[in-house]
Image 1 (cartoon, rainbow, N blue to C red):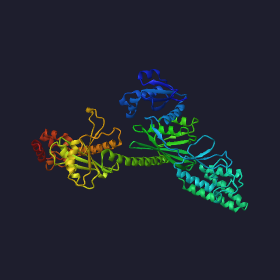
Image 2: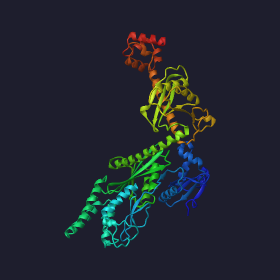
Image 3: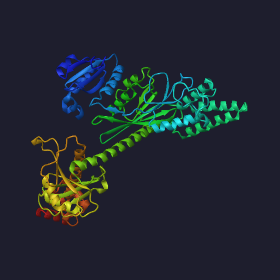
Image 4: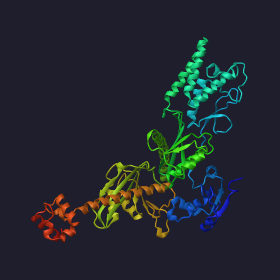
Length: 607
C-alpha cells in the first residue's frame, strides 16, 4: 500500500495537534494547499517533534518558517520502531523529493562490475544497479573511465572471458582475445571449471584488496608449474604477480591494518553543499565519489550530514564497520542501530589523528567539487547578468561604489572589486573626499568617480549604491571619459510602498528593472552593493575615530603622547580637563606649571 494512502492526516492547527498526535515513533510529512508533500521527517516521538514546528516564527529558522507558512496539513505514518522510521523517511524523500528537505542529488547511477559465480565460466559485466541476486558486485566506481581501466587490467592479468551471455559460445577456434593472451578460451579450449574457479577467486580477492592472498596463491601455482617443467605456465603466473604488485604499489595506503572505512567529508559555500565519500578497503583508499545536496541553505551542518547518511545508506547491501564524518550527528545511537541492528557499525566524527586526516582529505575533495560548481555557476551567472541588464559584454570585472559621511563631515568613498564573480581584494580602494562642503551625496559620488576614472584598468561594470539620481550624477562625470564602463545603480526596496525587491536603474530609463526576488543576478548585484556599503562605512568609522582622537591637547607644544594619555586617564575627557582647576592639572605626572597654564588657556579659547 502507498505510504501516503495508509497515513493519518491532520490540519496544521496547534490545538488539534496537541490533542490528537501520538507520542510513538514514525514519519511525518507536511503538505501544501495542493496536498503535495513539501517536507518529510522522522521522529522518535511524533507529537513532540511536530509541535516543535509550531513555535513563533521568530524562534524558527528562516527556511523552516517559510515552509510552515505553506504547510496546511500534516500526515503521519506510525512505525514499530525508530529504525523503521529511518527507512521509510529515506524512501519517501527519494520518491517525492520534497521542496524543503535536504536532497542527496545523485543524477546518475555509478557503474559497477558484476561477477556471477553461479555461472560455470563467469565474466565481468558492467551494470548500473546493484541487486541482491547472489552475484558479487565491485564498485560503484567514481567514473566510467576508472572502471574500464580496471576492467582492462583484469582481462589482461586474470584472463576472464569477455564474450556475452551466461555461457561461452561454442567455437571451433578460440577468439582473438585468446590468441592475444587475454582470455583462457573456454569457448574452444578445454578449460576445467575448477581452474577457472581459481582465477575467479583471485579476481574476487583483488577487488576485496586481499592482494597478499592472491600473491601467495600465484606463487604456489608458479612453483608447482616450475617443478613440472611447465615454464611457459610458470612465467604466466610470474607476470601476474608482477602486475598485481605494481598496482598495489600505486595504492594510497592509509592504515597498516586491513580496515574497511567510509569517510564522508562535507563542504559548503555560496549555497552549494557537497559531500565527498572516500572508501577505504583493507587499509587503502579504493575510491572517492562526490555528491551534491540540494536544500542545504539555512540548515545546520549536523542535519545535512544526517540527511546524507540516511539517504546514502538506505538499501545499501554493504555498510562498513566504521563511518567517519566531518560533522557530528546528533542522534548518533539511533543512526548506528539503524545502520546495523547488531551494533557492528560505528559513526564517528574524529577530532585528531590519522582518522581526522582522512576526514580532511574527504573535505578537500568536496571543496574542489563546490569550487567547480561555483565556477560553472558564475560563468552562467555573468551571461545572465549581461542579458538582464542589456550589457554589451559579460561583466567579468565589476566594481561597486559607495560613499559615507556624517552630516557632510569626514566624507569618504569606497570601491570594491569583483573578478569572475569573486571578491578581488587587491582591487579595493578608499577615498577621502575633500572638495565638497556640507551634505551633498551626488557631488561626493561625482568626485569619487572622477578620481577613479583616472586609474587603469577600468572595469566592465560600475554598480552605484543609490537610485536614479545617483546614477545620473555618476553618468555626468563618466560621459566625458572615453573608456568609461557601463554603469547601473541599485536601490533598496521601499517597504512603505510594498516593494519586495531592490530596483535597478540603467542609463536612459527612469523606470527601474525589477528582477525576481530569487534571481541569482539580483543576489549578486545586492552582494556587491552591500560589500561596497560595508567597506565605506568601515572606512568612515576609522577616519572619524582618528579625527576624534585629535584634540586641543595636540596643539599645545610640549604635550606629547605620554602626557596626553596621562591627562585623559585622570580626567576622562577634554571637557573634564577644561572644567578642572590649575592645581588638579599640574598634579598629573609629567605636567609642569607652564604646560598646565598653556593647557587651560588653550581650552578656554576653545582651540
